[in-house]
Image (cartoon, rainbow, N blue to C red; front, side, top):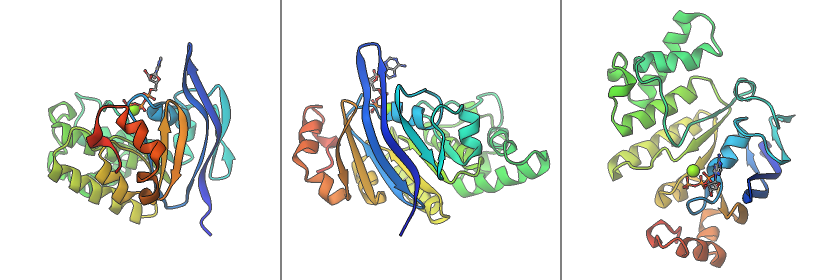
Length: 246
Ligand SMILES: Nc1ncnc2c1ncn2[C@@H]1O[C@H](COP(=O)(O)OP(=O)(O)OP(=O)(O)O)[C@@H](O)[C@H]1O
Ligand SMILES: [Mg+2]
């Protein structure tokens, strides 16, 4: 039996009168890919911010590899093996691509030479090796998404939280990122994936958790969730039928 690497229990967060996340519970098992989906504003990024220590929950508990991490600051959470990417990518624009990834590696590997060697290998893996000396600010959107992934990987995570790493990409580039996510997962890294590109998230995820107005409205295997009337209704309300899982 797979053990949970992440255990979320009763997580809640409000912003003023808005309940962005309400009493949310779910697990991610070791080595699993789980998709976190839902219409715009459903609370997905807020969940990531709470899991990674950037936002303190109003209520609830987060367990990671058997430890309670609720309320720990981001660097402590990251040191335990949980890394995230940001929906709005934010590399150090003036630093080279290699420097950006080396900074991530230095958290685990204090020897600069070794950190740079690891960063170089990761850039190879994500397909950015030829861009290593360029400033991050010169990259295309697709390349910045890869850089964001590389920076997270450099911290040697056990669980990787990916926030819309395919948004705004063309079909071919999306397919390449799907393959990259699969490869990363095959190395044994569990992945929690926020994604609006339904074909991608459905094909990658073993399980889906669906949020709507901060609440979990469905959870299960992608095929079952796609046919769930509550899920279809939530997406129809968005006026973006193309984004619906069915
Ligand atoms: N720091 C904040 N202060 C006030 N309201 C916020 C804050 N962050 C998020 N919200 C609100 O909380 C709700 C959930 O936002 P969140 O960004 O988590 O949604 P999301 O599911 O990631 O949406 P999207 O798919 O558009 O990225 C939204 O109504 C948003 O406007
Ligand atoms: Mg978001």
